[in-house]
Length: 89
Image (cartoon, rainbow, N blue to C red; front, side, top):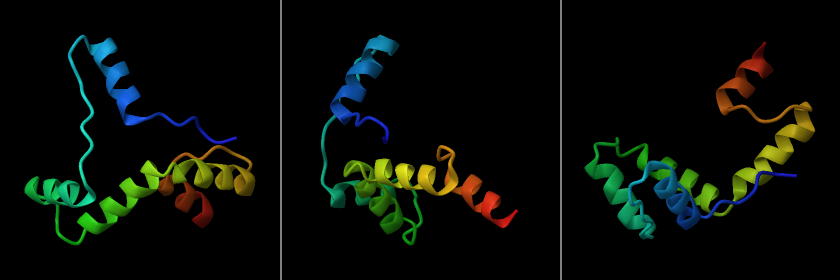
């Protein structure tokens, strides 16, 4: 039911093919990713939320969420803002 899983390595390969430039996927730890976010100026309070979101994506958790939204609303998931606005309308 949910979307197909695309592995980061496959995504990098497809991006390379389409762009004509070499894209590679190099796995890093969650701690390294958090440090990268901080180094790019992300506010400290936002870093844990972004890491949590990345973990959900990495576990393919969004596919389950998408299926739940379809079952609840009868429509495909758009984005969180769309869902909240529709619920409040």
